Image 1 (tube, rainbow, N blue to C red):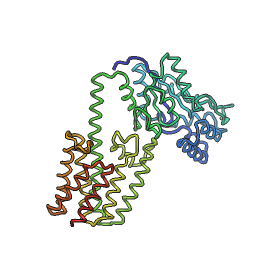
Image 2: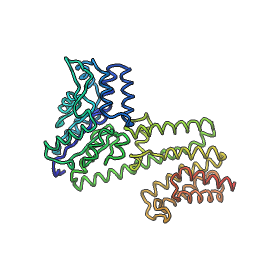
Image 3: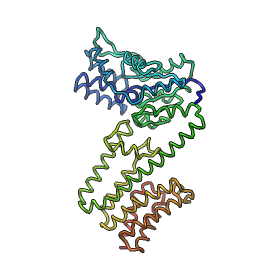
Image 4: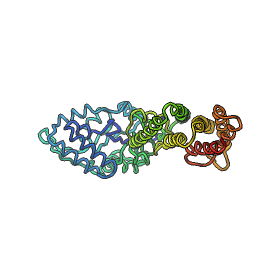
Length: 421
């Protein structure tokens, strides 16, 4: 790769270099009550009810009396994300300068972290220590909202570069100011405010993922661009197949309902509530056991910055079918939704060429695949004539520009079947 000129790569620390927040680890070390209080304050900060200075003052005053050696002990026990050292080394090999900047970690620790990771420099907040004991007082520009901008501007003067040469990797809203000024912003397991505005997003515990986006901004060669494009196509295929695999799993719901109807409804509703909690966690840089892993495998690129509604509408379509229709009709509508809609999406997405005039997001090829699959599903339960009607109606509904076809397909098809059976 050829690099046209040196860039300044700025990394936040909490949530980017460290897997979690140093403030919380430090508070937990000083006592359970302090830890719970710090959790509450961090929550208030995340929803914009506290600014960074208020957060730091109220957390650090509670660790008054903590020994300096305890700060170092907490620091060395704080787990870093995977491949942090390797990422810094590769960035330096490309001729860039790395700065680690934190508005939560003491400056003495940030200086050591920079040495530990072979970064160019490290900056943190000033924590007052008297005779080896923390006084609970804080200071320095990084303890204020505008602090990170001031530190970066100082570095720009030192290296004789501009904001157009800056890449910022951050996760929370305290990085928004420098992200908005930088040429490139990368959200790493980011909270929703950053997720909305960052140029690139990385949802991983592997810091090396940021290298792909830094490389894209570094005049990549044709080989690198081609490799990136192939990875994107491969990811799109695998992601869509996994997504529709989950979709097809709804095919088993009617059979479970036949065994225990009420329990099946309760499980569906409970799973939907858990999914909503999982999505909230994902959009705020956290992970929910099992569900976050599945969502990460299935979420589309267009959904990485917003709430993915498809699983909710799918569950709602299945639940409403079970509630409103007879067992036979529910079997048919859910089977069509699970299989035909999945087939239409896969064929349409990768092979669709002829667009439907009244809905350019749909293709003739995808709709044809939907009709054939729907007919096969319906023939398991219905005579040919009725199966043809159900398949045709569901296919027409699928082509319509309805936002939530996971609901409109089963309800519309079920209503027609209810009228003719």
